[in-house]
Amino acid sequence: MSITLQTHAFAGNPLRSNSETLKALLLEGAHDGSSSNFKVLPFRKGRPFASSSDSVWRLGWLRWSELGALGLPRFDEGSFVYLGPEVEAAGGVCWAIDVSDSVGGSVVEVGSGRFCFVELRTLMVATDWADTASMGELAIAGHARALLEWHNVSRFCGHCGSATVSIDAGRRKQCSNESCKKRFYPRVDPVVIMLVIDKANDHALLSRPSRFVPRMWSCLSGFIEPGESLEEAVRRETWEETGIEVDEVIYHSSQPWPVGPNSMPCQLMVGFFAYAKSFEITVDKEELEDAQWHSREDVKKALTFAEYEKAQRTAAVKVEQMCKGVEKGQNFSSDFNVESGELAQMFIPGPFAIAHHLISSWVHQGLPESTGSLSKSDSQSNL
Image 1 (tube, helix red, strand yellow):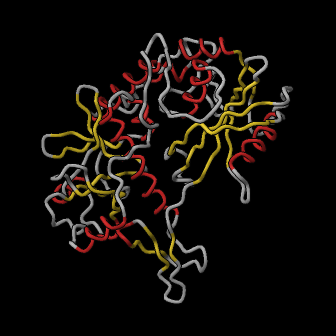
Image 2 (cartoon, one colour; image 1 turned 45 degrees about the horizontal axis):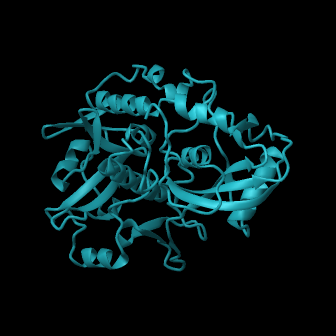
Image 3 (cartoon, helix red, strand yellow; image 1 turned 135 degrees about the vertical axis):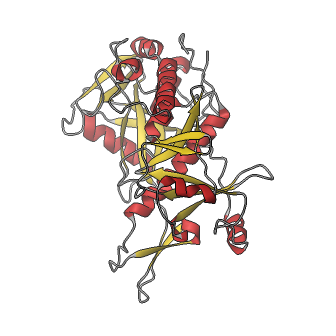
């Protein structure tokens, strides 16, 4: 089966709206909970509220009157972050809220439903990438988490040190000091991620940071420095981490990545192919555990043997069990062959990661000559 994605995981958010829509909603008072179509997505410590049925997870949207089930006596209006309106004419106006101070248990019952707070990375793996609705919900959860985490790390003004307050329905923050009143906006940390290619020998350069699970390999990546172009960052990071000089750099696609560390609430992964002009590897051991050239055939085998579909099903079952109150001590890791590497000498990240699409594009379509759409034909026997 081929994988044909319209967007990367976390992209394609169906709730994104323009500033005029937000202004109209604020004028109508739609942020005070009185509207019948007011919908809230709670988060606890970066984990979105979710439910699961038949191993298909869904976001746990609540009405204003249902928020008390989370264990907090009251909610400050300024705690809500505006996400956008649903596309349907009678759809809800969607908000998110951080309820990390709530005292509820691991499973929350609301009406006839059972919900729990699930790590976004778990939901990412559990998402059926062929299901447009599920991919849309993942994008909404990613967007909401990024905004809420930005609020958590921007509580104080970087100019005078005073507390900041939420304005514009949580889409901005402003210093509370009357003599300062600096405004702050959600930021995105750009990261270049590149597949370095040895065109003459038909090899690709893959690396292993020390944090990776055994036998997992991926593309090089790194942050952009001030005053640096994306292409310059690709060349510098490749040289610093592996000692490889890069010549031509070709853009592939980009992906929002809201599952990085909390100190960087939302990264934007900007993907490139890069052609090497030197080939002797000198690994920076402070950055990487290893880096090696791999043949197209070896990388193709890694794509074939890593059971991404099985990992998706197992993660989906895990979410369902969590919502049923399965004890935290239960170990699901043995079922995650894509993460444990049990079935292959090497494997690469799954289809939820831009690295997968960079690598599989090179494996199945040959050397890139120009930019293209995300849609790739990843003819893998087990997907």
